[in-house]
Length: 408
Ligand SMILES: *[C@@H]1O[C@H](CO)[C@@H](O)[C@H](O)[C@H]1NC(C)=O
Ligand SMILES: *[C@@H]1O[C@H](CO)[C@@H](O)[C@H](O)[C@H]1NC(C)=O
Ligand SMILES: *[C@@H]1O[C@H](CO)[C@@H](O)[C@H](O)[C@H]1NC(C)=O
Ligand SMILES: *[C@@H]1O[C@H](CO)[C@@H](O)[C@H](O)[C@H]1NC(C)=O
Ligand SMILES: *[C@@H]1O[C@H](CO)[C@@H](O)[C@H](O)[C@H]1NC(C)=O
Ligand SMILES: *[C@@H]1O[C@H](CO)[C@@H](O)[C@H](O)[C@H]1NC(C)=O
Ligand SMILES: *[C@@H]1O[C@H](CO)[C@@H](O)[C@H](O)[C@H]1NC(C)=O
Image (cartoon, rainbow, N blue to C red; front, side, top):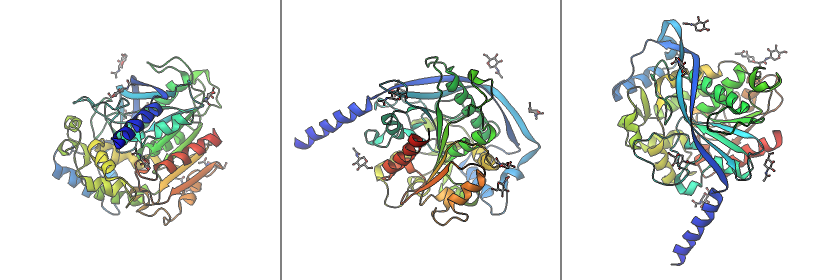
């Protein structure tokens, strides 16, 4: 009895915390245009073909993406996409800045209500607001509690957003075009479903692939176009960025991730029912241990959270993985505050030891942002790549939010 009333009490207090925000689900129509890579590559349509793709991709000394590039090399992709998104602000109204959270490589279903999600719906976004354990692992909640508004979304191709050709359409450049368009609309206050209110301060928080997209966005548009939002030419595309689960070392260590991931067709995994709706070319980790290897550091996580991460992780399109490296191939002249935060044992970006990379993370960051004196980096001791879902998550959230508090 005592324990029952204790858990009732806990639930009540969690509900109180959870209600201290206003959230809205949105469906945003976007017209997007991007110059993608044009590959001569047959969409992997069996697990054997997925493994062939991984083995071809992971060969030392070879750029598989270059090998399969067509004679044209590029293809312009334009189209109308529907983007599923969530916007939340504190109960007291819009926060001191809006944080755009860009999803990591695997994300999780969205359920602010903690109700059972409907079958057949596609899920995503929820790396930032993880539904297990009464939302105990929610960066979004931590940001709202510090008086920030948050916006997060399913990228094109995945979750509840429009699907597309997983080889030549759903690629990094198209994802960055979506991020740019969403950012501009939020600045201008012209996002359908939200009040026509300008967001004068916007920061971006990426994780992993989302960090690479943030990097590319700021590198391509260190400033906003002057016509945007009646804004002045000094307006930045972003007022500050946090690159989480990230370093410049992806090219060196990505094979750990490829081989550790035990990738199979998403529809062949026994995660959410939603997985069945993904066709050829959408891949996901085939078992729980693969998710553990790539995302969780030893002794730093709750096994129930690992299980949830496996079951609810969203797939990735083969075209996305083939084009991730393009996003960080240039130096960045973005001049706003930059925070890089990585787990000590990150497999994909540091080969399992972020203290031992050569160059070190601070040296990498200094060379990629050569003219920016507002760059800081931090390594979370004992954490892996899935920073938001490990026991060290509260420290991770606090570091990111402290950085924004002081710099925005
Ligand atoms: C893609 O669009 C760009 C800019 O509009 C143009 O210069 C280029 O020729 C186009 N490429 C193709 C393959 O159509
Ligand atoms: C996108 O939608 C707009 C408005 O509905 C339409 O005019 C346009 O033709 C569409 N473009 C494409 C490429 O489908
Ligand atoms: C949150 O930020 C807004 C905008 O800066 C401000 O008006 C409001 O007073 C802040 N709320 C709290 C509770 O600090
Ligand atoms: C947003 O969508 C999710 C999943 O469909 C649903 O569980 C949740 O209740 C919705 N939230 C709001 C605020 O409507
Ligand atoms: C850094 O500044 C130098 C000197 O002004 C300039 O030549 C270079 O292009 C800048 N690099 C970046 C990435 O902004
Ligand atoms: C980036 O800048 C560094 C200097 O900080 C320079 O050594 C390097 O060649 C530049 N890389 C590119 C791709 O321009
Ligand atoms: C929430 O997480 C913290 C640290 O990760 C842990 O100490 C606490 O027991 C968790 N609470 C719940 C309700 O799961």
